[in-house]
Amino acid sequence: MARYVDGFIVAVPSANVEAYRKLARKAGKVWMEYGALEYVECIADDVKPGKLTSFPQSVKQKADETVAFSWITYKSRKHRDTVNAKVMADPRIASMDPKTMPFDAKRMIFGGFKSIVEF
Image (cartoon, rainbow, N blue to C red; front, side, top):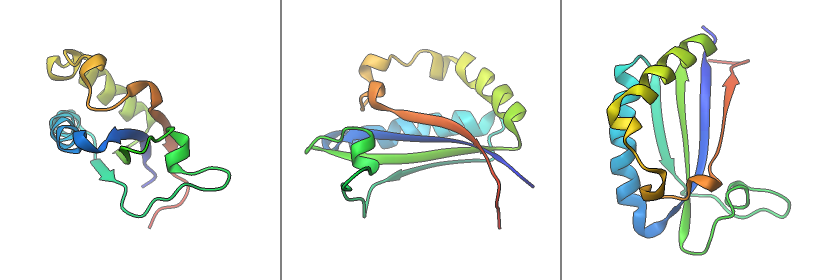
């Protein structure tokens, strides 16, 4: 079954990793309640700056930050759009202020992807 994936990369201040984890747990529960197939949040463990490009460079990572990589999977793009509309209307998400996030949302990279190979 081909799935649809939303992917995200953000720089998280190292001092905010636990706050980011709490936010991710809260958000993940909401996405799953509305039908996401999978919600995964990861913190960099073996990620180095590259010569031309890399995860750290993509989010303009600062010395006191780490990179978070996450994804949410859905049945299809239509399913993603339906789930996200419900999530964004949910007061637990709608009430979140971007200014109080434990990361700089302006440096977040995100996008939707259709799968072409799955095992």
